[in-house]
Image (cartoon, rainbow, N blue to C red; front, side):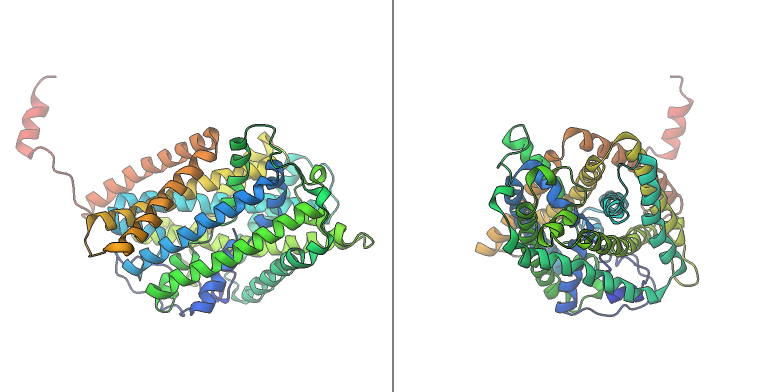
Length: 485
């Protein structure tokens, strides 16, 4: 999970607008297939990959197989988003727009709420990984929870300030962080294999429990690492010929990212002894020290690269959090302050709220958990909340296919049903594998969102923006109210 705006598009953060609510907006520059594919790759490969090998090592070498399976599921989702974009090619908001198109405002709100939650909770997960590398860079040993929280606040609020002041010149910084992120990954994924030792790989199942428990440990962080597969779909209005290119870019970007993930993760597991890798928040430091055992500063160098890359990822995802809430608010399905913008078009209220929330989540996490468990918990919370938009997108496509609104026959129908049906099952399995505690907490957050929707919907009814349900006729209602209970 990285910045969906690790791309020069950061220069023009234009307000989003739903095709279902016409309004004047600035026309964004178009993305060709190459740029759209790069956008997907930059969105998927993020700071989480610098911590992922340690989490997968806790499951054992089976983690590599789980990562490969999740990659297949992610590619199916990429195909699904391409198919949905063919039907709703000018959608703004991607997953939110698909659900609203098929099921109406309530479903659109639910998906938008869940995606907004996962976006800022994902920022908390990114910054928790970032903190490990800050500690490694500055040789901070055994920091307290409050010390790490202070570091996390820097990681969250520096990008927020950048977004608030609208520093367009920061595009060059985004591009530099993308390069700095990919170079060490490619180096480990290619050169690192010449230094791999078979003895470093741990047991197939290192979870200490059943095979399924090991799969559960690996599944959450594996899917978290593929969040961003929907980047081209979300920015479909900026993609040239979206009906054709969104699906292609999503598939190509996901496939390249999957190959890189598997190569890098397996290499790190072979570069670092299993006992040293498990519960290690900065495994790439150890991996580089294994490749360059006589260069003392090699580990700190990669830690510095990860720190700079993390700030770049957080900078882009802060904007994504803001634009997600802005798109829904402009359709009057979210509190209106989230659509407030200054003279530079910056949705300042959304930036502030979208940064305060992960800051508070990090405060709670660091006071209730420690070490790598902070990262894994936040990853699981993010995965559950993003699985719901994925699930809703899949059933939106399933509804379309079963309704036969358009003639789809033969093997094409079988293929599309297989993609939609498998995506439904994949989303359900990921939710189930996340564990009951995280699912329970995510459910509470979702229910809180439904309370908010009740007030928003009541306001829309008062303003005549949506139809009111048919109740008793006024005269009958008066009689009912006047009768004793």
